[in-house]
Length: 93
Image 1 (tube, rainbow, N blue to C red):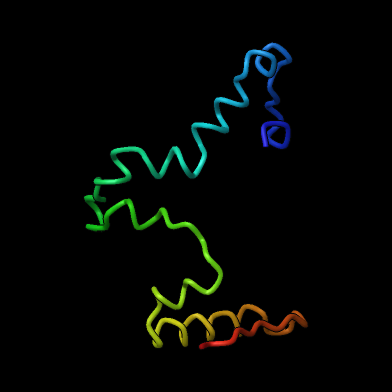
Image 2: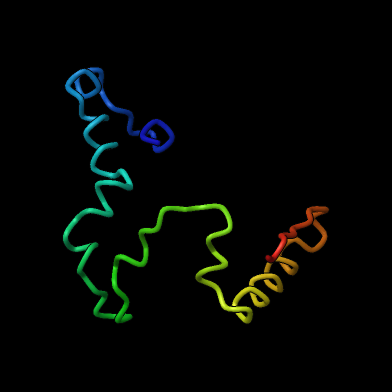
């Protein structure tokens, strides 16, 4: 990403472990275990930060979406994919 942003790390930074430390600090495990993300809450939206940290499991979205939410998402996807030649479908169990 740093190279893409035309701001690559120097050889010294790479050799000193700067890249590895950034990767560690930005990891799912580290971010989800920060106290602020375990117990903090957005003052703007009254939403706990921990809701942003879920381990993705195939099909788990069904445990978090209502039927109405699923239908709305299907509608949006159909609109966005229209004319692209792509199709989206899932099996609801």
